[in-house]
Length: 549
Image (cartoon, rainbow, N blue to C red; front, side, top):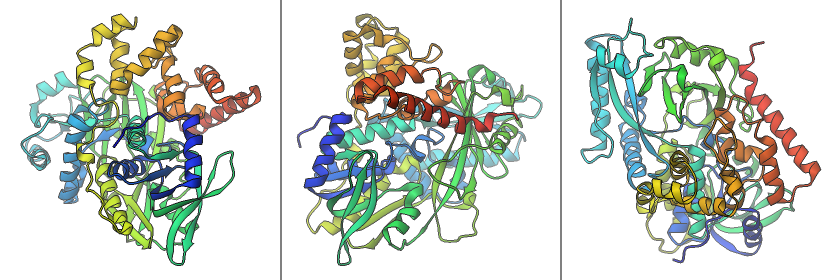
């Protein structure tokens, strides 16, 4: 199979939209989150003709608003969901070692103990099982027990008056939006057509069989896309889309809101992340590029899935739970960023609390030619995608190869480890700091070469977007030319994470990034002002939870 250009941009979008009008696809995927992107990659790498449409930006929903963890899910052991944990741990190992080592990194967590014997035995047994479920061939270290003195050295911010010791274990973390982007671009590389800002409006039927979808691109006219199988990977939009399409689902998707806060690095003194059990779930204190992400909540959500925001009570809850073990206590004034995402949970019992719902996934076939995939967790996206394509392939009435994605590194993984050995040489050759080279390597992997060549042509792109963060101006240009960014929110919220890493939520860089977008997308002065105003309104809604009055 010949590899194609993986770039996503305005020209690519127009070309792919033109193809959607004239070609017949084996699979048409609705949804550009991690699962939809995974389905597109799985199908395209099996040699199927695949198209993906997304009503907004790639990863614009749940897949950019997670806890940024690739993990088995310790709390699912308490629900006796051993299969899910084992599956997730296997996926975690593959991502860290082979599939996405440039994006998925090991991270340690400390489970602080407040009792000397019973709690250590119980938690220790759980973590031993957690490690054993992965098996003995593993990339991440085994858990280890720490005494009170060692805990005080590793995490000085943990309250010495109540912490009697701890257990340290390892999971992994990821920039979820960047990871989803690389999955989609890898799918593009293997032939998938990708059209963002393109909404599915209705199904096209031939009798009972679904034979395509009517779509409407933003700023364009509606048209029909023909496909042998349509795969819905709509996440929290699954139920509304079923209703719109006039189909009856074999399950219900319930939404659970997970809110997070971000605090400066010096607000917490610790060499490790921290996990504590709460009355309802668990709370993570996660190291994040010199800062800390603290979360999450788990509350039922019944409002518009397109606009989840953290509330003041969410922030208060997170602070209260974290302050049970931290000293000095975190204050509301410490919080520099906040965001919230929605979990799509499968439910058959309408009254069950979302904290008790399983993270298993389900594949549904409500009509010939139509398949949906829902549930699951970010870590198991690849397995979900494989299962969905397996079911969809049965509709094609021909032999379809088995999934190869377990052996398929994502874009940027090839050559990553070799490039990490050349950090000093690259820094010297391109007149950048070694810190800047490492930053780019851990976001783009071997794709760093493209960014560095852009800086060679235009040295001014080597400067930072924000003096207090590592993002370079070249990343904004790359976001438009290679990653399909079409507005300020795409770049400030997802291609970078300035939205929650900067205390002004990106307002300070909005004008500079708008200039870059205007140049590449042909915006008029009026359009540029409109985009900046829309971004300001977006920031206002996101920051509402941080207002004190």
